[in-house]
Image: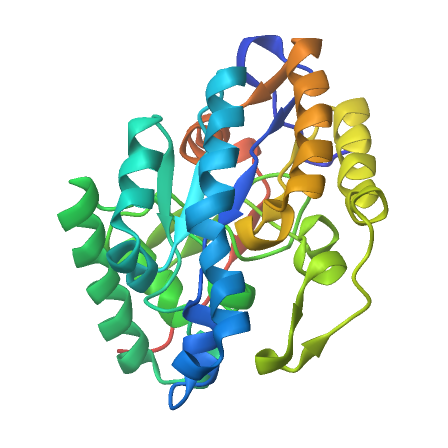
Length: 287
């Protein structure tokens, strides 16, 4: 089924990582910098993520004994320090997710480096260490960002989509593990509605919107693969959606044969496979 299969920890049937991107109100503030404070409805929708949904999610993880990965822009970390503290207190991982959710394709590599390293400083100040993983806003990773990841000794990225399983990205300056997302397990398409981003889609019911996530899990489980939802607290963290997700997650935990781990641990397990991983080579721009 897979050209480059991975044997998971302790002979588990498959692996999984439940990831959340905590963008909060950075999305609205970035899209409407001149009048964001007047857009109370959209700003408050974003604020719901770190203030209401994340505590709910952390409570579930604590009850189920899970340690997972959250990605946060540096601006969000600075403006929601209690959220950072609560995530770290639970033993979870915080990954790099830009400064304020800027699309890297909309500015130069030099600008991206400034924002990227500004965010690194926030991570070190608030967590005591550099992050081990990165996810690009809108998955818009560039060769320039890959260079930054290698320069700063990142273990993994989660923005590219060349496989179902983690794979190795090789460059002339070093390598990095890629843990691939894809839009079929992202909750933005079924649940998001944000006029400021010109994104208005029919919002689906919890059962309909989450069905594809669990169909993807069933396929990963049957084939010994990897399942990684990309979720947003202000979307899937809403009470009806999270109640349904929590119920299914509890069933998966109770099975006992699914390795549910932080992405850092997933990347380390993949790296142990060395040359048997799929390999993709990326050319970096001249300096």
